[in-house]
Length: 147
Image 1 (cartoon, rainbow, N blue to C red):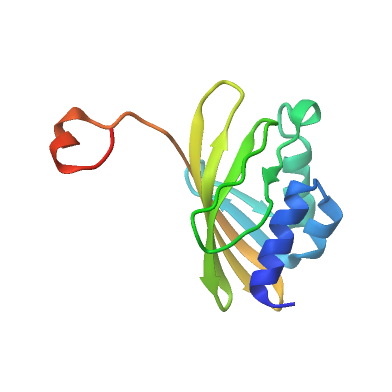
Image 2 (image 1 turned 180 degrees about the vertical axis):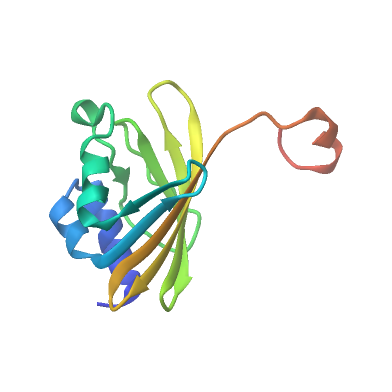
C-alpha cells in the first residue's frame, strides 16, 4: 500500500471508530506530540487510551468525517460532536499534512493541522496543532478579504 493510501485508510478507520485498523497502521515506535500543551503520547496503547477516554465520546463519538480525500478544499461534515471536517490532505514520500476544522457541541469551531511522518509503511510520528477561531481585528479590514 502506498503511503498516501495508508494515510487515507487511517483517516477512514478513525471515521469508522475502528481502533484495530488504526493500530495496525501505527508504527511500533509511534509518538504523537501536542506542542501547545506540551504533551507527548508514546505508542499505540496510550494513543488508543486517550481516544477511548475522550470526554463525551460514549455519547457522540469523536470521529472525523470522511467521504473521500483529495488534494483540494473538499469538506466532509458530520453531525456528532466533536465534528471533524477534513479539508485538505497533501504530501509525498513519508511526510503528509492534514488540515481541517473541529466543531464542538458548545458552538466553537477550532482549526487543526496534523503533520504525519511514515516509516516502513506505518505512521511513525504525528504532531497536531489546534487553534480556536477568533474575530479579525478591525484595523486589518482595509487590507484583507472577508471579515
